Length: 398
Image (cartoon, rainbow, N blue to C red):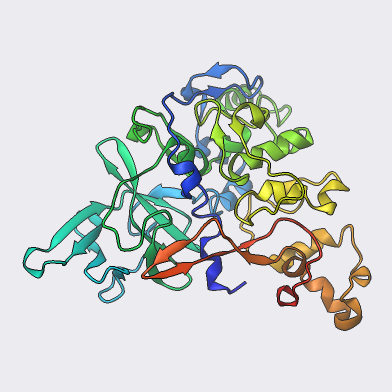
């Protein structure tokens, strides 16, 4: 679990090239929890504070998860990057170009300095406005130019304590022009209002950061009103409980963000758990026998697993989205609910200790070929957890 290459896992998922340049021109809409196909105004969302008044235990742990912290306003608490002198510079493959990260009285900034002509150095500076990523592994940063949203060219790799070139930006190029389109915010935020065109134009005040309770449970105003008027009653009244949805609808709720690059069929932000995802996104299906990148489509990889095909498992069979889950070995409990350690092919070598960590053998960390960073002449490939549960021949994975 200490591999530094894992720093990218999940954090640059929506910032990868296939989706960044899709254009959208319609404003996002919402739907009622009791009838997902029906439009409702955004005021029916109540926010996490309203949920915590009754669900304190769940919200207390959820607020510390990477899902909830996947985006936030940029400040000294949310930015993980190192601004100390000597550690705040990113060199590039272009000897005349480097980036400087600085903390000033009025905020945090990235400055590109091009010294191709020492007498006429060119510098471009932009502010850190939004943080993408919880800071556990890595972060990417966004900035506003008026009401248009762009990706900053320098990201931060937490585990190696270094600034890196943001995925999608060419190494050694002085650019600040990668647009953030609605599909990016659909997975790294909960709600937003598009003002397209252009595709990266938004109402700044509409952005709800992170994954909130209502991202998975749907708008909560009707639920809150019901329990304020009738404190004793059915807890699930007028709210979506994803765990009670049919299996495919449960999977759709996760696939919205964990099924790789996709093309929106309707305005991003329209999907509510309980909807049929295929009506909202066109997700490429390479077919059963076609290799899938470990970062490309986690849902497709899971579906290829014999464990998935032979059971009724869903993502939440192993994942508890309300709590921080950090230790891969701890997932062995779920594996052993169906399998016996003695049946493992390595049991005769390792004995009972084989039961202490099923995941690193049967869901190994592998290099992603789709997601990478070109930094100072080097191609950095992150290692990502392969969600195809299988027997892998490579002994290095054991």
